[in-house]
Amino acid sequence: MSDIADRVKKIVVEHLGVEEDKVTETASFIDDLGADSLDTVELVMAFEEEFGIEIPDDAAETIQTFGDAVKFIDQATAA
Amino acid sequence: MFDLTGKNALITGASGGIGGAVAAALHAAGATMTLSGTREAPLQELAASLGERAHVVTANLGDPAAVEALPKKAAEAMGSVDILVNNAGITRDNLFMRMSDEEWAQVLDVNLTSSFRLARGVLRGMMKARWGRIVSITSVVGTTGNPGQGNYAAAKAGLVGMSKSLAYEVASRGITVNCVAPGFIETAMTDKLNDDQKGRILTQIPAGRMGHADEIAAAVLYLASPEAAYVTGATLHVNGGMAMV
Image (cartoon, rainbow over all chains, first blue to last red; front, side, top):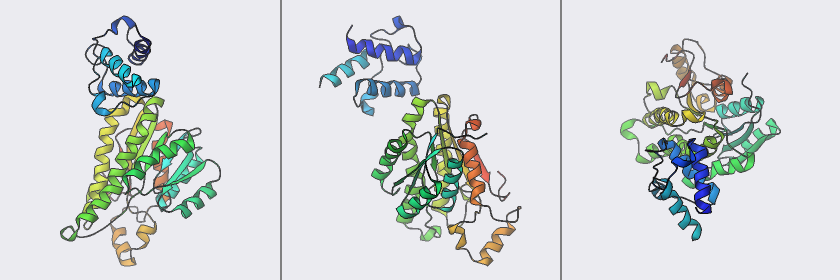
């Protein structure tokens, strides 16, 4: 697992209080990990700070799963 | 009780009668203040009278860019914004049939839209801190209506609906969102009334007198305090019994 995925996973585990092994590639923050809509906003805020990137609202809406988040941040930090 | 030591507060319209009293009350309770308004001189004067823990950031709340920048500048000056007091307000009174689009828009922009933008601007820090207080100064006329103030009453009633909606969203994060609704308070705004007008108003007030800015400040101080953690989405009416709602 990449360094980015590790860091994203750490944020998700800490913020949502879920077991690490539940945070799989396809795990949906809302449907599988118990996040409410405000949690997803806070996760995006935490990602922005951890990686020093801006995640615009329309992009944030496409980040539904752990895999989505890692993929987006991978591309955003590579640019 | 009501100790704000270590808390950082941003207040708009601080150069006005109520704004100045609120700023002084929060400051006296230990808060660090950022005083905002359009005119720098009276703000600097107020800051000087408060002494330490007082910053000045001027902003025209009719200018969206200035409104967006204000919470950032306040956070730079103080380190964070833990308490936001949306106090600034303007009036552009006119009979409804004569009211221009501009009179409507100016009042809505300054009194309502700027409060939305400021609240949005301070929420990120409050969410992270798991603590925040947003208090908006509304008006008795937002509840009762007032001839000649269709725009002002709409903006003030709008603040109540906005505050309640936001209160729902952020209650679980330790952030409360409330309103204080003054009745007739002795300020520069009400000084303009003549004795005849004042006399008529007083007949509507069971307390038999106008209120003091300090009495509004005390209500804001309570809602901003740690002790008011369980009060959210509320409007505290401070009007001498003029409207018991």
